Image (cartoon, rainbow over all chains, first blue to last red; front, side):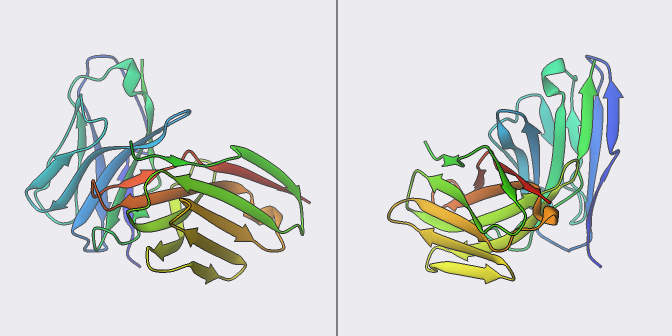
Length: 112
Length: 112
């Protein structure tokens, strides 16, 4: 069965370190998305990609970057982790832009 | 500003009760509206997607309605069960912006 996976599932890091969260989907979807979920804010879009070599900034992109070198993967990099980036991160993908999105299980990141 | 609001934030009902979850949105120019379920510590699972031209969608005990003119959607759950306990999120794909905007969710607890 097609799926979307994220790794690691849990990560503790220190302020200032670079961190990369992995997202891999086997749906063969063109569109991929990164969200963060925080109490009081709900799900907010960080970055998204409509296909290979395409990346776009979302609502809360400061301090984050992505790159898309193939269809299956969209890694999210925190350039210099900050305590404000402590959150749960979700990756999602969709076939068509307005189609339903399929979500990964999430990565809980703690920045100390 | 394009927003999605879900009230109440939490709801507790006895098993067997029929219930309605509410979602409101600020702009009637939408492409579709999606309902998701999120279990604690898990990712989001798509429940129903209603296109802007549709009035409702049904899946098993779930029925979602859409009224664009009033900016409202409801998710009706019939004969609720303890297994329905989860957070339910509404998300709107607005014509303008090309992104899915999420509400903050309603946390549902169904007591045996």
